[in-house]
Structures are given as structure tokens and as C-alpha cells.
Amino acid sequence: MKLGVIPGDGIGVEVTAEALRVLDAVLPGVEKVEYDLGAARYRRTGEILPDSVLHEIRGHDAILLGAIGDPSVPPGVLERDLLLRLRFELDHYVNLRPAKLYPGVRTPLSGDQEIDFVVYREGTEGPYTGNGGVLRRGTPHEVATEVSVNTAFGVERVVRAAFARAQSRERKRVTLVHKTNVLKHAGGLWQRTVDAVAAEFPDVTVDYHHVDAVMIHLVTHPERYDVIVTDNLFGDIVTDLAGAICGGIGLAASANVNPERLTPSMFEPVHGSAPDIAGQDKADPTAAVLSVALMLEHLGEQQAAQRIEAAVRADLASRDPERPGGTREIGERLARAVS
Ligand code: IPM
Ligand code: MN
Image 1: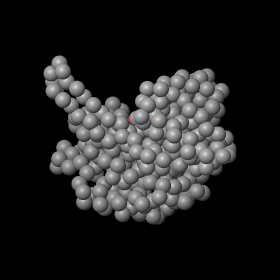
Image 2: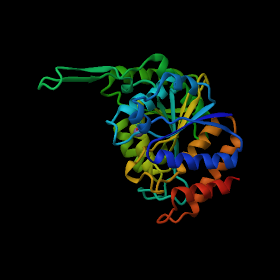
Image 3: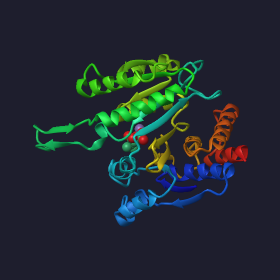
Image 4: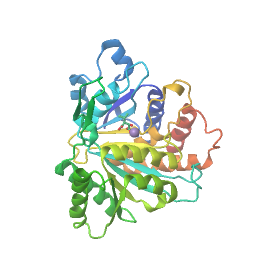
């Protein structure tokens, strides 16, 4: 197994080190190549993602990414030209984000809900394509557009992946999340696609929620969700709230997947580089560690993945919420537990 590692910026570096510590403990001998992409390289050389590096990265079995973004770089530059470029170039059309409330974890909700759903966020289309522009910039008559791109091909493949996943789960329910009452063109395509694919999965229950209502339901009845399928931007928003109700984004893992395996999939915590706490051994590496579990599952190392999840579950159950431990300490605990 050959792994490309992009620790990136801020706490990305710290949590990635712990994620690798746990990986080495559960599955020794994985070959790793580290890439110094991110703010430091950009400042030093002006490079963000050289084509030669992208080409090399394509040769790996998977990519582990820490976090991208730094206050020294104008906002959006690294996010778009590094993180989003990787997702687009590697055709990571499934952005998979599990939301699970583990026993013992503090949630802002009442705490007696059982939360266990997965979000299938489309990863290569929607308003993220950069399709838009500005007219009469800086004038009172400025017009700015950001066109959401939704293709039949792109929608169908992520919807199909979501149904396949639902079929393997106990509750077998897919919820389409959109805003079809306003976004009629894109919404229509998503709804028609879900209806068509649903016909091929008669054992899967299907429903539809407007994205604004989902913000309510996730707080009042999160247990009702099983598999959510949605577009790139709605998925971005939904998964931040999903992270918050499951104990915070310090615990939220994600996978940018190309299910056909034509390219390496990329695994990263949902959180960002958190420059305010970077370098202080404060960041919780659990999301990065759980992202390693998603990676191992994707690569067919189910047993190793399960060992990591079990270790995290036990660790969360026994943590003192006031003093969970520092980045290294948590990483060392989890590494010990899986070895
Ligand atoms: C995420 C992030 C990214 C996104 C940003 C950093 C471009 O918020 O992974 O959820 O919007 O996808
Ligand atoms: Mn986000």
C-alpha cells in the first residue's frame, strides 16, 4: 500500500502525525510519501499544486490530508487551487461524511438521541465549479453570478452510490436534501434522478427534505436520518451541523471517494487548519484518526478499520470531557489501543 500524505497547514500537521501513528500501530509497513503542499510552500515558491506533484499523487493508493488554509494567504486561494483542485482533478464525486454520536460524547442536543447517518455530498459539481463571473465590478451596478452546475451524469452517479450504501444499512433509507421549491432546474434533475434510481432499489425507503428544514430536523430529530444525498454546497453546510451535533468537528471524518478507483481517494478530517490553536498540542486528532479508518475500509482493510473505530469508541467513552488530553496524548492512547 502506497500512501500520499499532505499534512498541510496549522493543526493539519499535528493531527496527521497522530493519524499516522495510529495507522502504523494497526497496520505496520505502509509506504508513505509526504508532500509539503500548503501555505508554507506557497509563500516560499508561489506554487500551490504543481502538475508534476499532481501526477505523482495519482500513483498512490490513497491520500491522507490534514487541513489547508492559513491567514498569511488570501482566503480561498489554497482552498480552491489545492483542496478543491485535488477533489476535482481526482474526480472525487462522493464526499462521504459519516455522522455518529458515540456513547459518552457531549452533544449540544439533549443527548438521548441515537445519531448514526452518512451524508453523500456530491463532490465535483454544484456551485463549486467556479462557473460564474462579475460584471461592472466595483460599481453600484455590479452583477455577480455563481452558477450551480448539475449534470445528469454527475447527479446519477452519486445518487446511485447513496442508494447502494443505504441498501447495505439496517434502516435502508435515503433522504434527498435540496431546495426544489426554489431551485427548480437543478432540484428537478435531482428529484427525477432519485425517483428513477429508487425504482431499481425497491427495498430502500426514499424521502425528500428541503435543506432549511433539515437544519431544524438535525437538531430536533437527527435519529430519523440514515443516508442523506445532496449537492456540493448543501452537503458542506449539512455536514458542519452534523459534526456539531455529534460532538464537534474535532471528531468528524470524511472521505473524498472515486468509487470506481480510477484515482486515489482522499481522506481528511472535516475541520480546517484552526490557526488559532495551531502548534499548541490542543487539536483533537480523533477526526484524522477516524479518516484513516475510512481509508482502510475503502482499501479493503476492514479489520484494521474496525479496530480503529472500536479504539475511538472506547476512548471517547472513557474521556473526561473537561480534560480529553492533548493532541499527542490522544494519538498515543489510540495507537496503544489498536496495537
Ligand atoms: C470542507 C471545507 C471546504 C469545502 C472548503 C475549505 C473549500 O469547508 O471540506 O467542508 O467547502 O468543501
Ligand atoms: Mn465545510
